Image 1 (cartoon, rainbow over the protein chains, first blue to last red):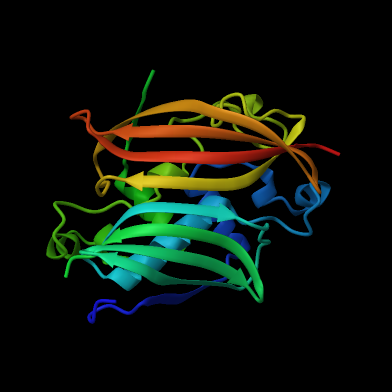
Image 2: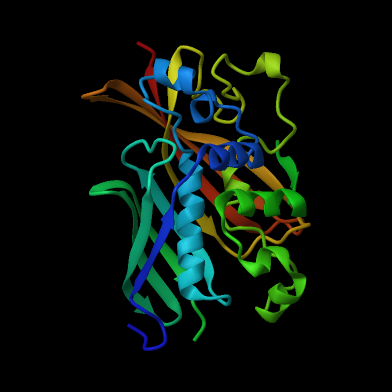
Length: 129
Length: 150
């Protein structure tokens, strides 16, 4: 690790509410009812509206930026949803540095809900010394 | 055919507010310049999270579940449930508020897997974002999953 930067990221805690999902759908022009229409979500087999997968990507980008500081730049983000996340779920976003290559940090990230791993990701960030 | 997308400052800032990501470089020009940027930065996944890079179709042309038929060409239909999959984003540089990007979208793969949840179809769609100089700024590869409705 580099001395000036922690080798772990987070935790960044999130709890996407109904308002979060509404605003994120609006900001991404996403009309999919699964994210705001509870009766419809139930017909699709979900107990409640589901958070958007893209929201998790945005959470992970925030996690990396807050760790890397204002000069850091996200260069690559690869994330996969492993299980659906319903509205109101308490989420914890964390990560660790796998290796440094000069100013480039290779990262492993995850979003968990309780003891369940919901999103897993790898990323690369450029972090000037 | 490419789509011209203007990285609107207000839209980018609303995205950041929805996420709860209050990075000053998204909102405050002085803070952005202090961090070495030429202008206000767009959140890294703002452009790749859009469900449409245009005004989108009229409501009557959306599927009954609200899905935009044009976002993942060939992948979505009223008979299938669309589920979030994964996304790989390659960011060659920061995207700045106020700039214009030209976007090309291509379907690059399709495959079927039998799972405990039935037969799932995976579609891979790639979007390439170029700046006005023609340089690739961002490449996003989405894998979306559909399942037949019960």
